Image (cartoon, rainbow, N blue to C red; front, side, top):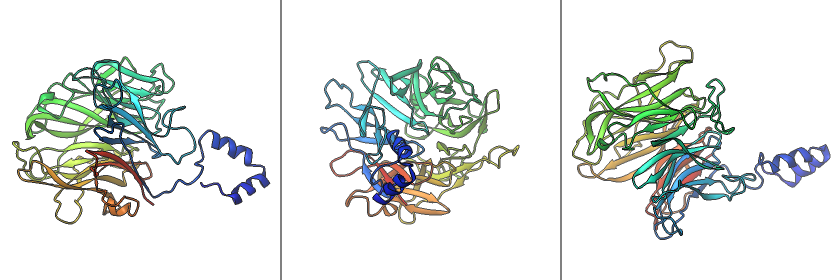
Length: 437
């Protein structure tokens, strides 16, 4: 809502101005121009190495978490630090009360490493989760709150996502902001479940600062292999559905395990595991990246062409997994639906994020060079209503001339505000935020 002179005169005439004034003060009404269609470059903390990335967005699209190189800031010994971003045109609280709008530092745990990264933000935008290094190459899962960073059970690992509060889960964190939330991720000293160096990392969830719970794993996968590492990477808004990946000891590409996608569903007593399938053909190797807010759609990628385990790249295709109608005993359709790449020369794709009900999906269409070793071209992509859209065209003319959108990573609940990463002139990498009608 934009408050014009005519609106103000009407409010004065009706006596409603006091109520609206209070709403403006507490940040419930945008004041001034806040267009639906926009494009903002995230920027960077550092001028000597301009690098940033956007990782996740709140449900309303007003807050973003990511990271930026910070090694030019005094006393910062490691280049990467957690960042929070708020849209400048919104009247009300910035990322943290009393702070500034735009991009701010979220800090890190005291250590020689001085490094942190937030992977997820809660749908209400009040809690961010990720990791902070406690020593060189040793990371602990953390939550980022306005009051500071708090370790999760003081275990090696990473937090990937966090739910809204749900009294049905009855979790007491001893913190009003955290009570009845679930945080998901993995624990393990290797901190790379998908890499061949990550054997032993385990999918977990936290229900308090001191309580970490292992998620159920299968004794054996359908291809006869055992799970060597696992991760929980996304959770529905109500905390009842978790998406993740189960890795087994065969290489998809150089130093990377193959995986089965999976979902855990709360049954009132525990999270029950359901192993999902890959696309038909090729290797058995698929991965989940995100879940819709309502917990009904999982997105990621699958494989229809055999890869080369000596290469640094892998032929993947965007896809989604959907649950059956509410109340159905069948649960999830284990077979994924392929999402085609943009028309043209680019052959491969992946889906990275979806909105509240899974009707809008974002990701990238790309292609590799020889082997394939290096992704030499990519385009941020949106799938909606059976259509495939080039996001650079979708956000035109707001995207600056010469700024090419490479990867779209997350989208707001209404499917209108999208975040991603690109490689503009003068930057090694930069996060961006764009809005469409």
